[in-house]
Length: 300
Image (tube, rainbow, N blue to C red; front, side):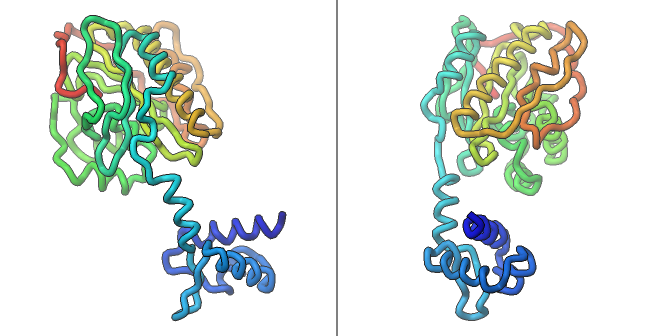
């Protein structure tokens, strides 16, 4: 087994090195005897998992290794068919529940299950969600590197759909820290007045974000904090089921309970252990009366 572990360590060492590495550099980094390292590299090169430049004799990650990685990440509409967890969430809540994926640089609805309430929000497969304003889009961004978020969000106008819409890259980044801390995002009047939504990320076997699952409802039905807490738990349960189905096996944790009468912090989980942060500020209870509509410009 030692030779297998050494081969894997070589691949891990070469993966981030765009300028490659010499035999001596790999020997010093991995502490593998030069003779053994040479044999491992020879086998990996033979199988095209490693290549060696004829010009400078440096080792690089080979085409076969990159092909395997590309096969696992080059996807479109990974979760196109509605998952039973989505149907169950829509049935339990009576609200519209849908999946969104980052396809290229766009957040796109790829599957949905409509709610049973007479007043339903309009969403369709193929609809694009604004990355900065929709809970579905921000959940997709929440676990990306900051530079990637800046590139995605900064390349387009950050339209102020309402007075509550974040309209700067800095505001979006600050909000994403909150999403990571509690494990889900809430969009309350930030995209459409009188509309409330909660979304959570779905993770693949490698811990990357595959999609987001979103429950969208008329704000008038979501004024009660306990109703909101139930909706949050419904979405998180669906997100966990979807992640389980994609092979995500990292640990999950639940936050400590909060005072009775507020959305319980336990309803914030599951949150991946490695991404868990401190508890977020309490979401303020909604005030005033909102006017609901039979259709919206675009739900979260």
